[in-house]
Amino acid sequence: MSEWKARRFWKASGVRPVGEGFEVALDDRPLRTPGKLPLLLPTEGLARAVAAEWDAQADVIDPHTMPLTRAANSAVEKVTPQFAGVAGMLAEYGGTDLLSYRADQPAELARRQAEAWDPLIDWAATDLRAPLRITHGVIPVEQDAPVLARLRGHLLDLDVFGLTALHDLVTLPGSLILGLAVIRGRIDADTAFRLSRIDEEFQIERWGQDDEARDAAESRRAAMGVAERLWHLSRRG
View (cartoon, rainbow, N blue to C red):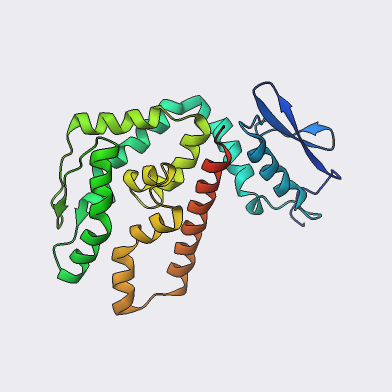
């Protein structure tokens, strides 16, 4: 028996204002989440980008080619009802932030980490008022509770779509500071991805890289790019 697949049933998509946001309509049917909730988007730009993903579908609908739609669905169905919990989970990355954990050997790797990461540690201390401690080797370091609380406060100040965008920008590189640097315009997502892979690239230079690892890395890079796009498209004003 062949697997059932959803097929295109509409001729064209459109965007229309609803309340304080926008919705996408397939012909005249408003788009809803998989859980049948209204998909209310904060900006016309994001709504048009989601509509374009639906317009690009051929006969068979492929959700993997609609990353903004999937992210918007997550914002409505998953992040909205547990906003504080998601913010708290992401805030925990500050306590074990990638940028705080440095190699002690070899010296070349330690040098590359310091050269790439120290400017962002300094930026976090000044712009975010969150000075993080740095450790070397495998010794864990405990961050100050007021610093972690301040970082959590930055997350609680976000809206639902902003927090949704930040999720992949934090969890994929393993760094709250990298994620916050992207949404605050300090760096872009490609730079954050590159900075998160200093250790991996150092090892690749010496031992090479297999195809599976390369494909997984590219998937993470692409997902971070989508998250950055979601952030910009969902900003009002």
